[in-house]
Length: 126
Figure 1 (cartoon, rainbow, N blue to C red):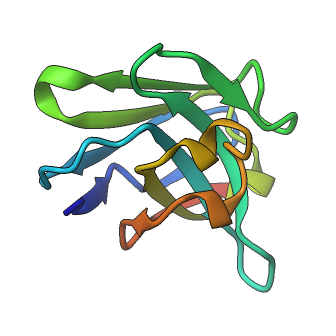
Figure 2: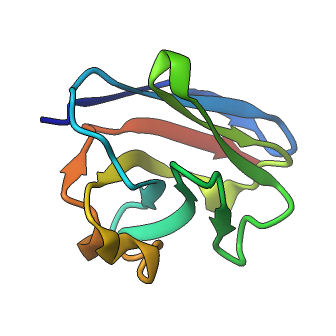
């Protein structure tokens, strides 16, 4: 079982930074973990993903160079460091865990992940 809890969301001004955290309190090994976001009235989109064994990271074009995904295996925690935030980054951010190999080739697709947190809100004002 995988149980994910996000934290770190806040309201910031454009250009600011935030670090989101996602703690996995379950006992099932995940093959991939990712951050997704969903703005009001829009579809959920993949932001960043990491292969938990190799540490390989992948990013959506809209955040590459500004966001960094990382993991602390000792703490069972996933992070998303977000710098140079823009108003268009405003959304509910979710972490997700995949427990099979399907996420290796679909790492930014929501359908590749079977476990989700409840989300944390990020609001960026101009």
